[in-house]
Image (cartoon, rainbow, N blue to C red; front, side, top):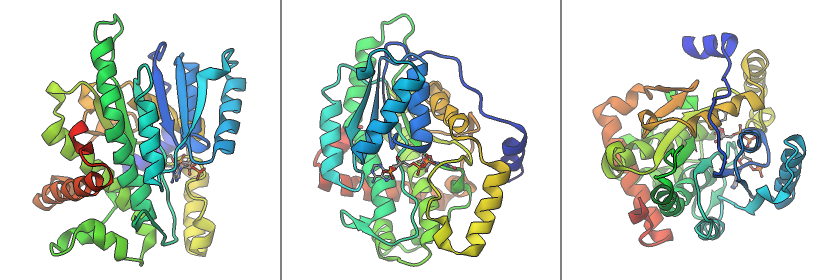
Length: 334
Ligand SMILES: NC(=O)c1ccc[n+]([C@@H]2O[C@H](COP(=O)([O-])OP(=O)(O)OC[C@H]3O[C@@H](n4cnc5c(N)ncnc54)[C@H](OP(=O)(O)O)[C@@H]3O)[C@@H](O)[C@H]2O)c1
């Protein structure tokens, strides 16, 4: 908490050095907020192609237009908008198929996320779980073959950097509670799909699940010494964006607390988005790890307990079953 206040009051993310010349980058949820500004930074840093994965093509095209104009991009085709709705597996599968047709893929930033106080189902699961966890990792697995192929093809290049898969998590993992882990009789995902109360706590839980899954992947199937793609999770800090668009409906208390925190501490969107560029440049020290304020940091204490490790294994086992049902064989892409 001390670090959070100190770094939001007296420190600001720096734009990392490092070029993306010749690289192809995908940013999901890039029509607005941090994703849009991260995409702008990737273009400014010389990426050959930046693809904005957006569920609303009109908003995506507006964002692309704004980037092309601000960065004075001569070849407008350098910034593409592809349709992606994480609430629809069909859309995610189509996006995955399309990206596997690319010449190369150097960076996938899984930035899109949903924070809502409404209980809604999407594809048979609570919508934040579907968007932030199931579809996010479905897309990650669909992209891994192309990221690995890019690593193999470009490894000899003089300024070679391994491809990156960056999953946007949140500092809210430090306060997230997952009481469902204590009930061993019913899958965690099934419990989350049924529990309609306390929806305010669901978004942080999905961000914790993201961290657990990446930690389990890199602990078991994708160890750093042997893996061609750097996979990390990250927290951009408290930033101005559309994420908290539903706070006004959450009651006066939430409005006041969030309003004051934002007024005092929120980083301008373009400044916060520098952390996404930074994560896409980090080395193997970040593989499987959580980056906050541009540094690899310990995750919440829960993750280092026996219960935390067991939960991590269980979450991935359950998620793997769900993903295999959506696309048989997809987990072998890991
Ligand atoms: N802002 C912060 O303070 C903060 C702090 C910690 C972590 N983060 C993380 O940073 C990332 C970016 O958030 P942000 O603050 O920039 O929020 P934002 O402004 O609300 O942007 C979220 C993006 O995700 C997209 N999205 C939501 N549901 C989607 C779906 N079903 N399919 C495809 N795209 C979908 C949104 O599209 P629409 O515009 O169509 O809804 C939007 O483009 C998130 O992962 C968030 O968890 C943010």
